[in-house]
Length: 153
Picture: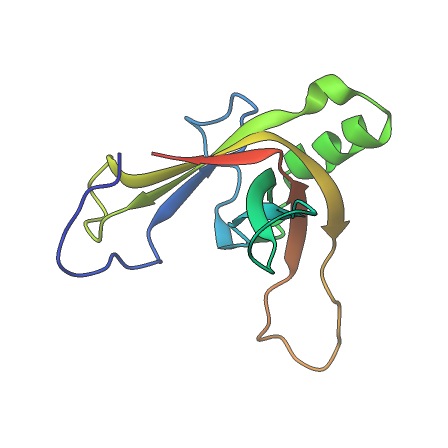
């Protein structure tokens, strides 16, 4: 469960577990996680004999948005091999990905908020943009995950 405090937590101290059994070993930390969102669609309904002239809004299907992960290219093939499993039609390759927001203390191992991306699967991988203009940029790869639902604890 999220821990309450007066000041908001910083966004810079987090862990991502891809659900591939490698939680104890680091295979490249992600520099950015974006797209954590959930949405409830609304069904509109009105009886023909209603006394009021407006529709009722009823909660309908809920869905989670796509989540994007970015990291520097480090030569690890865990992301690309997961994408390859999905491209091959392996629906059992869906995983639960866990994102843990930690407090500002780098020595603390406990999470203050945890998001579980249920039945996530990669739907897009983007490799780095390569340019010869200078050497100050980092080669980044991006992975977009399709998520069935997001659970926060």
